[in-house]
Structure formats: C-alpha cells, structure tokens
Image 1 (cartoon, rainbow, N blue to C red):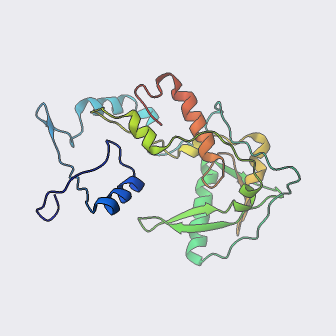
Image 2 (cartoon, rainbow, N blue to C red):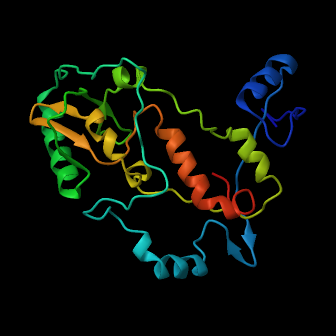
Image 3 (cartoon, rainbow, N blue to C red):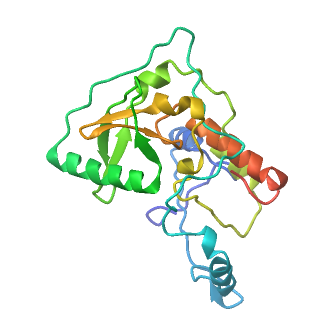
Length: 240
C-alpha cells in the first residue's frame, strides 16, 4: 500500500533487484514490505533466546572477541599465487599518505606483527598501501595488489549466486547467521607465495602469512574451504 492506495504486487518468492526494477518500469507499481516483531510462545523474536545464550556460553572458546596471537593451522586450502608464464615481480613505490594515515598505518602494522600475521620482508615484490574510510569514521588499510592480480592465473572455482542461495532457504521459518571473525585471516598463505604479497611502507617492507582482501583469487579460495568444511550438511541446514 502506498499513500493509502493498494497496488498489485508482481514477482516471485525471490525477487532480484534487476527484476524488481523491470517490474516497476513495466507496470508502474511498487513494493512495500514492513518487518515487525512477532511472538512465538509468548516471546518476542527480537529477544535473545535463553538456549542460544547457553550455547554461546558453552562454546565461548571458539567465539573470541579477538584473534589469538598465533597463526591459524594449515587447512585443506591455502592461498597459492600462480602467475602467467614470463611474469616478473611486481613493484610499486609507496603512495603518499597524510600524517593521520601514517599514524594509523604504524598502529596497524604493530598490531599485525603482534598477532604474527605479518613479518618483515626482503622480497623483490612490493605493493603500495592506501586507506579507505569505514562507516564509523575510522580508516581501513588496504594494499593495492592490482599489478599482481593482473598477472595471476585466475581460479575459476564457482561462487554461488545470492538468488540461488535464497532459493535454497525458501520455506524455512527459523534462521541463524554465522560470520567468521576475520575469516580470510584464517586461511594460510602457501609457503611459495608469501613473498609475492609483500607490501612497502614508510616503516619498511612486510609480507602477510595469511590470506587477505584484495587478492584476486581470495573469494574462490575461501569458498572452496567453506564448502569442504561444511560439505556433509551443505544445502541441508546451511548455505554458504
């Protein structure tokens, strides 16, 4: 209902953005959905259930507020960089950073060193650092791996489409969601590829020992590992 008028609703149980836009242009109608709280056995769905609280307390060792000061174990998949034949080490001069960015970069490097996620590097490879703002106003440190990605052979492992995943949960009434803490950092770099992701800073060169955002095959590697771990229950009670 829009402005007090009832409008016909077109579409299916799963409505993609592209299909929605086409329907609006074709029929000049719109959609309006309002989410409200409901009660199940006298308890509001927005209130944490006691059983969930107990479950989280029981497994609090795997639900830490921060990562341990050590590398994750080697898993089935590591991130390996295979470059096109004839490729040469990629190297870029550091980008100019503001005093605020330099201060933030120094803090983040100290944190990564303390966690054992990076180490000093003498690699001939070297990518520059840049910063992007987060929604909360803080800075996100990013590494510009575009040159390296360009000569990396692409991993064609299939990534599920969101609408396909939504199809899998059609008809379900109870949902839960798990989000790994720094999920990419829980995948180790292959030993023969660590030197290729070195990055250069005002305070020296370093290299990651774990996978990180910005690497072209990171989504495929992460998806493959999640599928391997969850294979026995994949599409039964979990989608990823």
